[in-house]
Image (cartoon, rainbow, N blue to C red; front, top):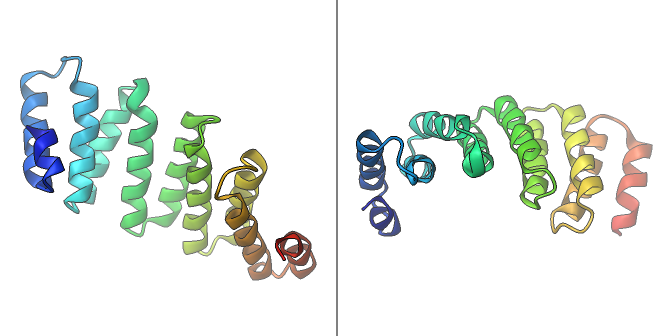
Length: 168
């Protein structure tokens, strides 16, 4: 029922259905996925604190849903404006993903979160990591640009020119 409610955009009802299933069947083989889907429904309902808690619980179980739970938790923090914590959470999610292309998105988003918190040194490192570790990823050129932007903000103009010049 939770999946149906979620598909219809009834996210509060979906979260309630997933929660009810988990209370009845906490050890069911679908429980890990239900925990993740409940967290996603809570996120879409705008209940970021509850969603963060649900993502954390889903991720603590480990398994194949742990990277998705880590990414969801990071987004909850970002949406709440908790940028340093979001950056750290995106870095953790990227580590769980390894060479999965979604790791590039996580390192890039960690850089964005550091930019939002005005920590341009850490942002530069994340954008550099995105471009270096995932050179063929669609975010690689944007990562190079944002690295250059951060270098400008840090007053490292010569280094910024060297980074940005190839984008011409």
